[in-house]
Image 1 (cartoon, one colour):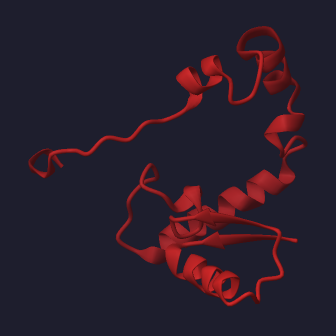
Image 2 (cartoon, one colour):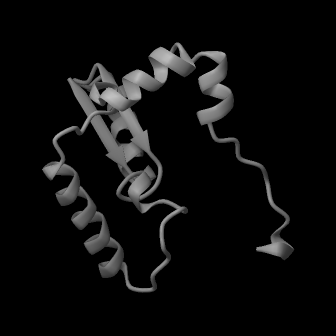
Length: 109
């Protein structure tokens, strides 16, 4: 069984179940941003929460219409790994695809 928690308050509920030995899940994915990455800091900022929710919902609806929904089944991604990156989580893929975050001086934000 798999669980996905969107937002830290939902993650806390799942972690409380795990700590209490009451969790039925074998794997838990935690996404800190409300709505997952789609509601994260890289997305447009709106004052009205309803706009954010509408945008999230519309992106999920569009995703459901896609013929290829899983990156590991995408022929172009397979070709990229076969011909260039060579292996998932390898040195080259980590160097080119992984993001690194650094603290920013607040006076520039």
